View 1 (cartoon, rainbow, N blue to C red):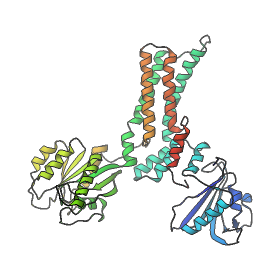
View 2: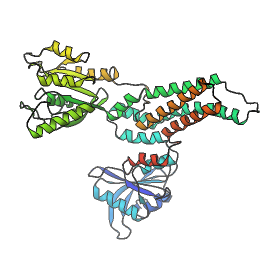
View 3: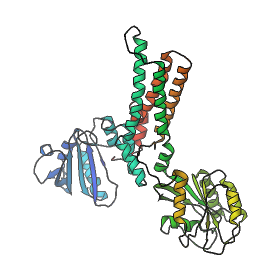
View 4: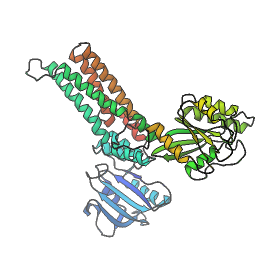
Length: 461
């Protein structure tokens, strides 16, 4: 499989739909498409203008069978997604027509594209850097408007500009150090040790600014792992339904109704919550319910946020107390539900037990306090609704790790300066930091890492 091969794949999800697209990219894209496309203009594709949309039919040249009526777009290099010639065949949506068109394209000389190969070619041909390529998948998988904005910012080069500016600082320092070492007799304007240190410190500050966005970026991309927990029949499933604004979980008066784990993604104030309605935690002899309780404990241990639901119409039980003790230092919101009923719960005792964790009074049945809950979640993690004028954030673990390692190298370089050691000693650490940061944009990344990144893409992208 070579990079000069002409590749093809279905770029739309398989299934019934309004349209299905077969994408072809490479030096032979037009010639291959020409073998199976008969247009209304009665011209070869080579004669038609770039970035044009052309009506015609896909015909099997061996049997003469008409496969579909299509619109075929021609896009000539370099003004294309891959910077290669691209043909996109817009078929009627459906599994059979799109697969049949793809089969013909492959029969006439194209190779089936690997996952992410179109975007990989865009990277290898210099249209986008590696961080922009990764942003393509972030954009596709965005769960909120904020997630979309951050992905678009990265796709348009927001992160690339920030990291390249840091690399430029380090490159200038390296150039001065190496010039002074290699040409000591030359009349080269030297950069003082103090200035070198200042520039390295400034680079570290810029790295820190990016690293400071990593936690927020992780939440925007992956969501907050949130569990709704409490003893049976306190209103956990009703709370999930209220947050979803639809009936997803079974709600009854029978304790232990939720025996399995229900997972949903909810957008709250721009924050994607991966929310889990767990089985009520209690001692039980029911084997199926016991499995659900154990799974509840597992999700609880991994949660970023715990929503503990208590029953205002019932006194504190040993199950309530046990769960409150389990929470420990985890971020949690205590929800006193069923406040529309006569209250038996000792609210003051609850507040004493949970310390500074927020305690909210709600009634899921009457839809009271739900907006307060949403506001409180946003306040805990982002001090209000998630907004940002600068959408440049670190959302990728690979980027975060590269910046952390680069910072370590630069801190070592500063220590070398403070110890009065020779310039060539510090240049090793600075060069390593420069390389680490280059991994983000793909300037210095290894082939195996590249392959792993693009393997995560879908075929056709």
